[in-house]
Image 1 (cartoon, rainbow over the protein chains, first blue to last red):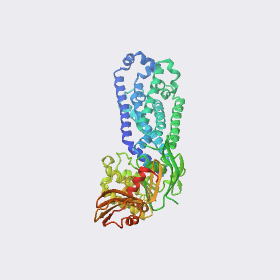
Image 2: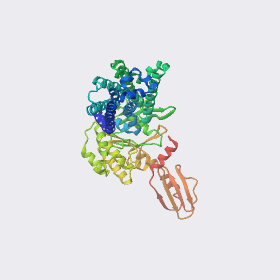
Image 3: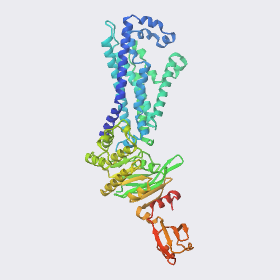
Image 4: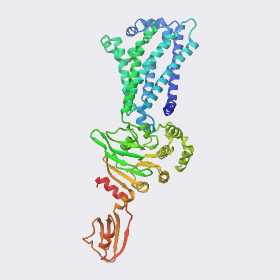
Length: 272
Length: 299
C-alpha cells in the first residue's frame, strides 16, 4: 500500500502541470462564456440569435432551443461544447493509457522488478484518472461560479446549482466511461499511441453515431451503443432531472473497462 | 537456498522457442555470466525471473520463492538493471532514485548511495539534473546506482557495462568484487567476453534458447587452445605426427604457429627430437572457447 501510494504521488506529480493548465483553461472558458452571455443579454440579442439558427440545428435542439438561447443556456454551453468534451475525454484517455506508456518506455520493468503487485498499477491509474477528471470538473464549476459572480447581469436568473451539478456529474461520468474504455485497451497495449488512438477513434465513431441518430431516424436503432447517448444536456437545460439510467450505464461501462484492465494487465507479458 | 533456481524453463513466441527447457542454478556469493548472441534468450530469461514474462513451461525461483506464484516475495531482495533504462526524461536523477528506492522493501541507506555515487563519479549536481540532459553513460551509472543502492542479496544485471567508459567499467568491476566479498550473488548477462573472463566465477552460455554450456571460468580456460610458436635453429618441416588437439596455423622454414588444446606435454614430446631454439606460449583465451560454442552450440 505504501509503495502504491508512492507510485500514485509520483504519477500525480508528473501530470500536475498538464492537469492544472487544462483545468484552468476550462475554468477560464466558463468565465469567458458567461462574459459573452452577459454581453448578449445586455444587448437583448438572444431573440435575434435564435432566429439565425439553421433548421437542422433547430431539429437537433428540439424544444430546448428556446431555453438554450438564453443567458442560462449559454452559461451551460461550457458543459457540452464539443471542444470542452473533447478536451476532457482526451485528458482521460491520456491518463488511462499511462500503463501502456510505462510499458513502452521500459519504466514498467523498473517498477515491476520491485515487490509491487500488478493490480496496483491499474488501481493507481483508476484513482489518477478519476481524481484528475473530478478536479477538472470542479475547476469548471468553480469557473462558472466565479463568472456568474463577476459578469452576470442583475435580475437575470442564473442556472440552478442542481442543473450545473447535474451537467458536471453526467459529463464526469461520460469522461470516466471513456477512461475505462481506454484503460482496458491500454492494459493490453505496448504503445500509448495505439491505445489512445484506438480509444479516441472509438469515441469519435460513437459520437458521430449519436449525432447522426439525432438527425436520421434509422440510426436511432443502434444509437444506444454510443455512450454519448447517455449525456443529454439539452434535456437537463429544459428542466428534466438527471436520469439515473444515464449514470448507471456510463458507470457500468467505466467499471467494465476497469475490470477488463485488471484482468488483461495481470495476464499479459510485459514487453516493449 | 539457491539465489536463482531455474528448472525446465520454456518460453515460446508463436513457433519460436525463445527459451527452451532451460535449467540453471546459482550458488550464493557467485558471479554468473549469462552469455549468448542477440536473440539467444538472455533477456527473456531475466524477464521471466522478474515475472514480467510468463513462461510456457518449467519454473523459476529466487531465494526459494517461485517467480510467478510468489513473485512479490521473490522480488523482495533483488536489484535489477535493465538493458535500457526506461525513465521519463522530465524527472531528475534524484527523483528517480528516491522513487525506485521507495518501491523497494528495504529502507534506503543514504550512506550506501553516497558511496556508490563516489565510486561511479556521479556527484549531487548530476542528480539534480533532469534525465533529458543525461548522456548514455550517465543513465547507465544512474541505473547501476538504483540497482545497488538497497544492497540487495541478488543482483540481476542486463548488459551492465553497455555505454560505460573504460574507467567506469573498471569502477564497476571493483564494485562487483566488493559485493561478492559481502556474500551477494550476481547474475549478469553480457556480450563482453573479456569482462566475463575477468569478473565471473561461472558462465552459462545460451544459444537459440538452449543452455549449451555451464562451466567454471577457470576450468573453461583450461579447455581453450593456447597459441604456441616454436622457433628452430635449422629448417624444420612440419612433422606428420603432431599430437591430437594441435592445430597448425602457419609455418615458415624455421618457425611454426600452432594452437594447442589441453596439456603441452604431448607436443613437447613430439618436437623433442627437432632443433628447437625457442618457444612462445601465450595465455589461453576464454573467448576462443566461447566463440566456438557460439558458432557450433553444444560440443
